[in-house]
Image (tube, rainbow, N blue to C red; front, side, top):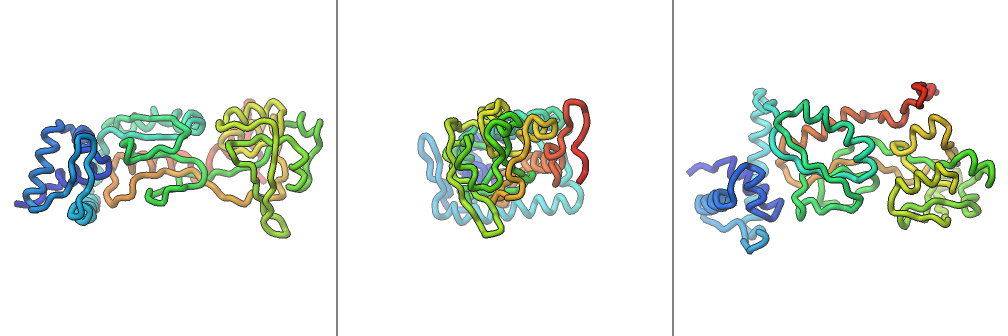
Amino acid sequence: MALDLDTLALFVRAAALGNVSAAGRERGLSPATASTRLAQLEGVLGARLLHRTTRRVALTQEGEVFLRQAQTLLEAEAQALASVGQGRTAPQGRLRVSCSSSFGRQHVSPALPEFLERYPGISLDFRLTDRVVDLIEEGVDLAIRVGALRDSTLIARKLASNRRTLCASPAYLAARGVPKHPGDLTAHECLILGEQRDWRFVTPGGMLSVRVGGRLASDNGEVLRDAVLAGCGIALKSTWDIGAHLLRGALVPVLSAYPLAEEVAIWAVYPSRAFVPPKTHALIEFLQARFGPAPYWDDAPTPSGEHRPSP
């Protein structure tokens, strides 16, 4: 009996989610039908692929070996279809996406109506959260993350650069003075994101780490944005969050001659597996095209409609 590619895709997804019923629902199958199909696959192979419990499934040793082969077969199918044009069929299915709250509200949410109009076969479950979501455990297809990546088990694709700068309000700098060197920050009120109290700079003498302090710390970037606008101190912020405020002069850059040492970006991350659904590719490519290699928030319009002059 030949292997059925739809059943292989069901198996790959069940392994990723750790749940047969959830994998079946994604493919429009009842839990009983999904379970039956996987049992039939095991019968064809003459091997048990999954350990089943009441709550989760886990790969057997044979299942781990077969998973890699199944992923390779599905990827080959996708490449074969694409080579003759059939792979251009419109992506379909429910896409579960997790995104950091502030970036999601400001830059992803406004783009979703256009995405849904372009891909009528895709439905979105868009979740905003500032915690690091376990994609496998929570059945999330794609996460949009801002900053440095931690989980090496995930595949990451860069969506956009994430230029950061130190900034303050003109009123704060008029009252407290303008720092000339990173070391001067120890005499200033610095607004702290989470536990990020060590700000690292590139200087002519090499890398310099400065331990900063201040009376306000928060795990929410929007709180710090409001505080820096109100003149409470100096903040380290991404231009996607404060670009428009820089352009209209409500905030001004600080220590521009000393680049920040850590380069971060905005990423799309998804489980590490060979077969990535077309719906996932569709959103990644849509956001890459929308943000572009030079993100629009680095040259956002001022309220009067003027743009930052070219250097």
